[in-house]
Length: 246
Image 1: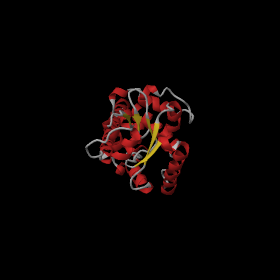
Image 2: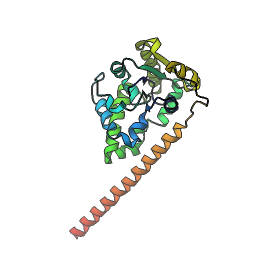
Image 3: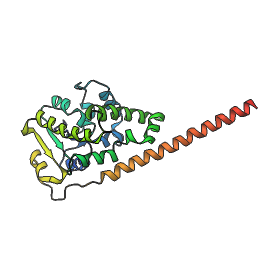
Image 4: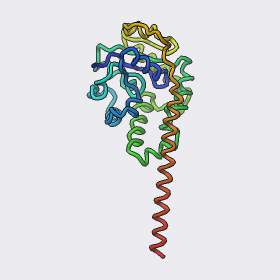
């Protein structure tokens, strides 16, 4: 199996629904959830952390993560779409856009996947767990730093980055190999682009915000439990010290 479709669209541009649609069309797809949820992909987070800490444009052994996939959408794959175009020259490129535009994308991103930067409880996980350190480092450097240029704390700059990025992709990809796509467009343009039949069912409309919130809440709960455990250890240590001094 080889990569045939490279998703260049940012996370929070309908990528979860597109991920489901591509799987339905027979294109096993890669998505951030494949990195952090799929237990069969042990080691993928380490791979993407290495990518994040390598200079932009560095070629990697991409088959290590994409061997079982025909498509990739969402982070972290969208962060290396240029590198993937060079590695898979026959692949087409899919640029997903938020159906309601750049500002809606920004609001959705800040409310969900930016939790690695704006939720203090995740910082606890970074401090106390290997997963937190790896995921935080990868996200900060590859997604928020390299791809989004460190502008997410400034709404106007982030919206401008979103729009300029669209222009970058359009300028770099031959028109016949590029589909600019919104999930509100439905099956037709995607199926036509891929040369497959239209399914006789509605286009997926996944409530990914709710799913992401559930993941975030689970991490927050875990951070509180860890803090409670640390506090208990400190209390025991202090109590033991007072007993020894007494």
